[in-house]
Image 1: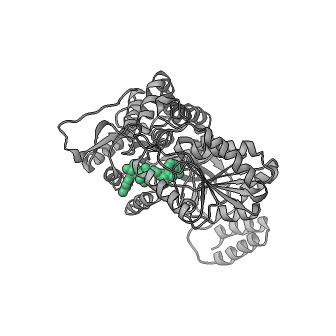
Image 2: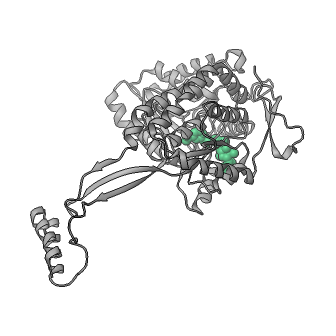
Image 3: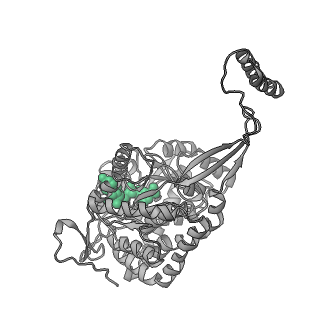
Length: 520
Ligand code: NAD
């Protein structure tokens, strides 16, 4: 496996990220931490580049950025290997969940972005007859993108592409947990030959992220934990600049009595264990109607038993946990659940080998007072809750601090859609898991502690712009009904116009608006 080594023998250890393999625990390299001055310099370079980048057309920007497709194709295996080395995830996951989305997004926005960003004519107003109304969008400036370690390529590159297509320049701060992928992010943008400063990458830890959120950026797009999200928002409030927070989740899966249980069990196993469960949209609470609970659990157990755990070179379905601290969270949640009466049907502990491997874990008889239910586990655990009926499932699904994703399983699609509409979260799949996030046309984001703001879809481009309203008059008249002077009969005409408008008589309103001009 290719090792991305960046040794800095002379640098003091405190100024570097020491990267260790999640598979073996061996040191893979050291990566310099960019300090506050370095972040400010990167933001200044991005600011200079913005002046000319914003002058390009959206078609030109998409054409330049689409060169990424060729770069990813040419280096597909190398990048997949390096991402897997960094995160421990299977090669299948590296291509499927990190690289594959990029061409799909570029193609989607090639079709939609030019229209989205074009000036639109909007309906005029009875208050201002004869004036044309328009809406247009303009780029914000420099966007700071702070990304996490679970999908370290995709979660840096997709928001960056959205911001760039909208005409902004970006400064990306990848996670210190996955600096090898941070270098890939830098490389892919370098390889497409963008003008200097259009994409800046500043590797580093929380201090680098804090420096970026306190710098002169014009927007922060943050993906990560709730605790850090709060800090980023507090920093942004000082200037103030817009912030988008893509935070954690505790996604509910509702298995109705009439579901295709075989499909639901396979969906739960994949949706809860893909990427070792380190996914904001991971299945984290499985509500099953009592009448099918035992059968579903039996099927799910069979699926979980089949999941092969190992490193990227071992043809495994599930790799190690990427972040050493996260495995401790999973262990704490499992322990607490067992102490409070939950049953472990499979797994429940670390795998006895080097690295950060944890067994795929199926837990039943889970209750809301358990940490494994109340907190985000972000690991390979499948907590199952038996519910009386769909009503109880929907109530429990919604009565939670998080609201990111959810799924509903039933053979009755109409019923599934109705339940989907009742879930308090950003996106729902019916008889499927996770996939909505991969559809570039659908907005993605959360509610409650899962954050706010949307990226992907139309909103994913527009959220990186300011919206401008323009009202245009030909300028032929020498005055306007609402302008000075206010004397004479102006107030009487205004009252008549108001009564016409409020009373539903538009001709009357119009007549008196014109009268206001003549009132002396
Ligand atoms: P984290 O909050 O620890 O770190 C995220 C990023 O913030 C890192 O780059 C980190 O260096 C940086 N950071 C740390 N302190 C900072 C500070 N004070 N100011 C600015 N930046 C700072 O999160 P993580 O552990 O990397 O990621 C896991 C979390 O991310 C989970 O909760 C997961 O659910 C969430 N997540 C959400 C989504 C989503 O789209 N909603 C997607 C993936 C992950």
